[in-house]
Length: 275
Image (cartoon, rainbow, N blue to C red; front, side, top):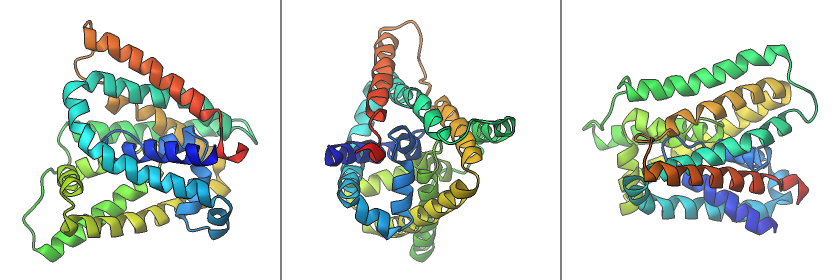
């Protein structure tokens, strides 16, 4: 059971990094393995040893989801954009009760938790609005190869930190920097000029991001989770599909929304700590 869960959670985590607007960190919280994966990313070897097989299958699922879905994303969003977006919205919304449950195991929310909640919500929505209104630069520049390598590594480093934070999409960060299409093509064509510096940046970013999250978690857990819940709720906004209305696709999309919520609730019932 542990290996199967690790594979499924990793698969969803990998897929989330291909879709702008989806947050891998959000799904880790929903599935009840956020703390565990952060500890592994932060290179806590005692945790890695204790949950080795779960983490191994999680890694396999992550790579599998990333590689497999990079070829499917164009098909799904070109042909079934409304249904696909609403399914992911269902996954996120269905997991919010579990996030609240995890956050309040030791103490209940306090009035001072309202501010980080609002800030978390505002950060995600602001990033989305700025991207939609063209605030961020788009497109790649024709820099020398060395400069390009530094750029790809730097962008990947920042995106990798976003991969750890619930509610923030690593793919969305790449869109904001104008290199999302470049990274997708590089994955499809195995362009090492892009992938090698990108992988280096990702490895450094996930370690740095995980250690930062764990540091804050130990001192300000409830405050951090308040911000996380705000970011998770905010992450639903970029997924609202264009063209939603009185049409067949929207009707099917509502079914996908309910399916996503059901899947999230079912998968979130079994936490890694209970295995």
